[in-house]
Length: 175
Image 1 (cartoon, rainbow, N blue to C red):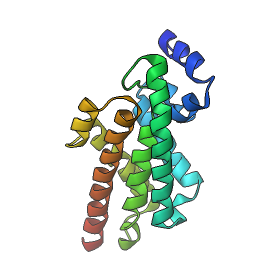
Image 2 (cartoon, rainbow, N blue to C red):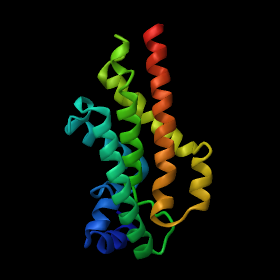
Image 3 (tube, helix red, strand yellow):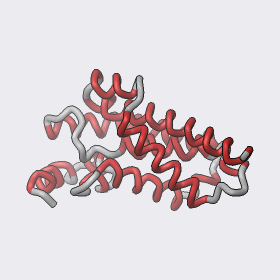
Image 4 (cartoon, one colour):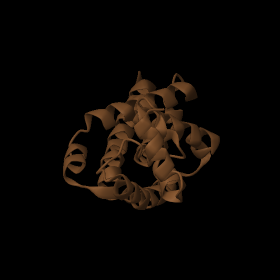
């Protein structure tokens, strides 16, 4: 762990907001913290059995996590004097959760659409959308600051990747 990450960890992990914003510490990965945070979100999704929850419950969990994430990410932004520190990955959790839970609408359609391939496709589509930041995610990323700015672009990326996952699932079912 680099000196900067150790310093950030000492500051952030003394407070619950630091734990939340860093995705229970997954944001302290020395490489690709957003990817690590997304992978942690997929793991949480699977371990919690969220695939068996009704869509409204998954969306409620995502919305509550978003709201708490805005507060926690805002606290981290102030603590580190940064608009969107790389250690903040709760936004990846929300985006990944949206991708998978909404994407589940088409998963059972195709017999060739296995559970592991669904998870991998959902993960990769969200990472691609998060990195490319199609409009309006790019605008939100540039123009908003603080906790809301850190969270909003990934929520939009999650919606885009969920739509792509639905389209992929539909395409596989008719192919």
